[in-house]
Image (tube, rainbow, N blue to C red; front, side, top):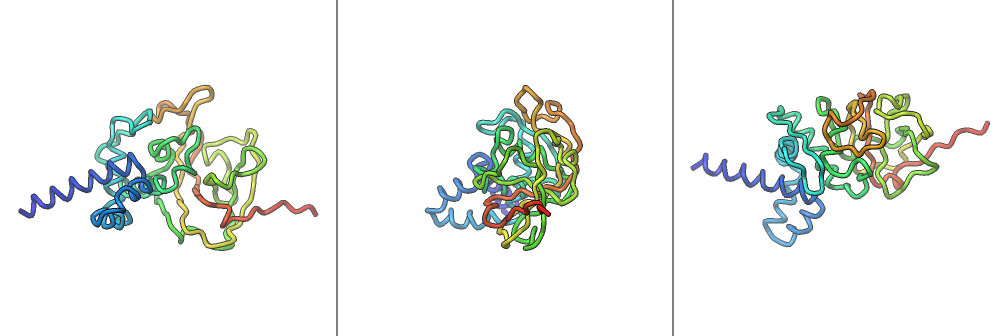
Length: 232
């Protein structure tokens, strides 16, 4: 009997993870929130067991997610890798409308650029007021509706798998406690080859440096201030 219950719970967990991977936490929570069971499931989204199940599901898929072009196909990843993947995937699903770009179109794209062999952190404790960060900006201004990708002061662009081409170094300071930021290390995978759409497989992307610390910062305009260069 205990084995049957355990099996049922495992299947239920896999089903919830698959649903969230396809629909995102915001959409899943909205659709489930009207039922008593749905309210309980929403609370479960913050549990470590859910993060691990979500990471395992996404890592092991060999078929693309809806509207995706590829899958990761990483079978039998250690529990620590599954947990980190799930933490990052859950963060993406919460803020995907602001994280998505031309190259980061789904959670597979997002995970592909994260080094899951190293720690992944999220939440309000990642940064504190007064911390300074930098980014290598394309264009003249940052979109307040788009999540910012930032790094530690002193990190070279090659450590983020990007180049200096057409980029400006911009410095930011944390002015108010941010409620949610994702910290990870980037891989050496560049999302895309000039002239060709990135497909999500490691062999389809250019390799350029990597290993640098990266902060993904949604709703950043409420919590960051740009530090203007001194004119003296």
